[in-house]
Structures are given as structure tokens and as C-alpha cells.
Amino acid sequence: MKVILLGTAAGGGFPQWNCACALCQAAQSGLLMSRTQECVAVSGNSRDWWLLNASPDIRTQLLATADLHPGPGPRDTPVRGVLLTDAELDHTLGLTILRGASDLTLYAAAPVLDALTTSLPLHGLLDRYEPWSWQLSTRPGGFDLTGGLRVSTHPISAKAPKYVTAASTDAHWVTALRIEDQNTGGTLIYAPCLADWPPGFDELLATATHAIVDGTFFSARELGAAVVSTNSDAGQSRMGHLPVDGPTGTLVALARHPSLRRIYTHLNNTNPLLDPASTPSTLIARAGIEVMPDGAEFTV
Ligand code: MLT
Ligand code: MN
Ligand code: ZN
Image (cartoon, rainbow, N blue to C red; front, side, top):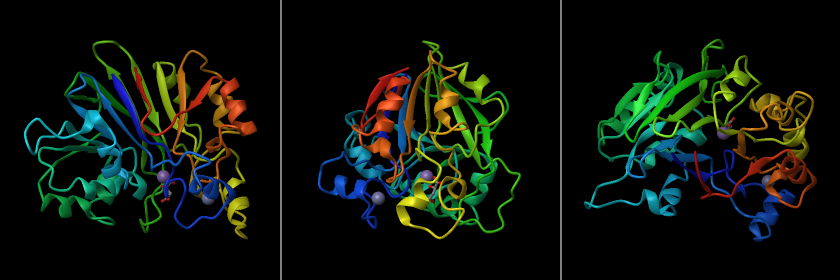
């Protein structure tokens, strides 16, 4: 399976348009690499491509990626559909950019499909441009994608998007995807939104060769510190992203899986991992965990 990291930043991208923090200024001036909002493309045969989430930057990302260019017919595209892990705006607004594409299939969990029908009614709206096939991703036994990929979903958290009023607090809003190449056995776990380290997640990682994991925040207080918030709940706990650092962070947890290729993504503009010369970047490199640039490709 070919995997391309189309975008690697959290919502807002890097730099973020309304942020003048030191990191965003460094990206504005070209000292640090800019990043578009988080999105991945996978293919089992290099012909049929599936998007994992659809970022608002999807147009730029598709144009920057030769494998995803249109053809051979004037309106042909190798993009077959989209698999959503959640209903967050930075993972769903790209669907509006894809409007009018024919024969797309979209997979999502029930609360996400529901949100895209009610609170953020993209389902009906987009179907008026070109009807797509909207499918439940959480079906028992998983499902197959053209190109030889087999997918199963795993519940991660009940973290609902801010725009959903009266969201059910016990629903599985966020899922991880397990994508297995049926020909090679290579298996990718994709979990860009971890509110905590969920039960069974170690066992899930043990079935894989590669993992793309939530690296939004390096430390728990990072967001509060960057925006000088008076909100005592600012930062990762409010945002629903487990930090990398600390005794309950993802770095300690991922250290239990040394033979897995581990990649952090969805980096917030406050995250020192955006600077390859930072001490946190050295720390995760020593642990064998990677941060990759937009456009990075690897084979699973
Ligand atoms: C998230 O990842 O928690 C959301 O994308 C936050 C947001 O809406 O910006
Ligand atoms: Mn996000
Ligand atoms: Zn910033």
C-alpha cells in the first residue's frame, strides 16, 4: 500500500492566518516549513486512491500530488472516495471542494453521518451536485476498498465537534482506521484524533506495521501558554487531544511498540515538533518516532 501524507497540520494549518506566535512567524518568514491541514491518501494498487479525511486544503493537496492528478479521460480522477475518522471541520470541509465528482464513496461512523445530515448538512447539499454513496464505516467485519485494501474501524472517543449542539456524550464520534493491504499484509493504523489512550489501542497497534498518530500538542499546557488564556481548561483537555509528552502522553505509550513505524501528524501551530531543531524534536527522534513533511510518501 502506498501512503501519502497530503497535509500534517491541525485545524488552521501552519502558519495559522490569525496567529502571530513565534512558530507561526517563523513559518511566515520561511524559517520553518509550512504545513497544510491534516489529510492522507492511500492506495493498494497505485491506481485507485482513497482519502483519509478531507481537509479544507484538499484542492492544493490534490494539485501538489502527481498520483492524484486527473485523467486519462477529461473528468476522470483516481480518487475513489473518502474515509472519515470524525466530523471535525478540518476533516470534513474538503468534501465541499470535491462537490460534483462522480462515483465517490464516503465512509463514516453513525454519529458522523448524522452530523453531516443535520448540524452540518453536507450530505443533502453535496448530493444535489452529484449523488455519492454514503456508507457506514463501523459495519462488523469491516469492508473492502478497490485496490485490495481491507478496512476496519475502532472506537476512539466521544469527542464531538464544537458546532454540534446537544451531542450525545456516549456516542463513538471518533474512530481509528485499520487498513490492511491484502496482497502484502502491510497494515496501517490511522488515529489522528486521540482524546486519551483508549482501551484496546495497544492490542490494535500490535496488529499493524505502521501507525499515523495524533501529535497535535507536545505538552498539555501548550495551547493555554501560546494564547495566554484565562481559561483554566485551555489546551489539550478542552481540545480533546492527548499530548505527546508526560507520563500519560503518547510518547510513553508508543515506546511500547518499538517495531512499529510510528508517525505523528495533525500538529498544532503551537507544537515545538514543528521546529526540527527543538529539544522535543530530538526527543521523539531518539525514540524512533517520525514527523514528516507534507507530501511525504511511504510504503506499507
Ligand atoms: C480538533 O481536531 O479537535 C478540531 O479540528 C478542532 C477545530 O475545530 O479546530
Ligand atoms: Mn482537527
Ligand atoms: Zn501560531
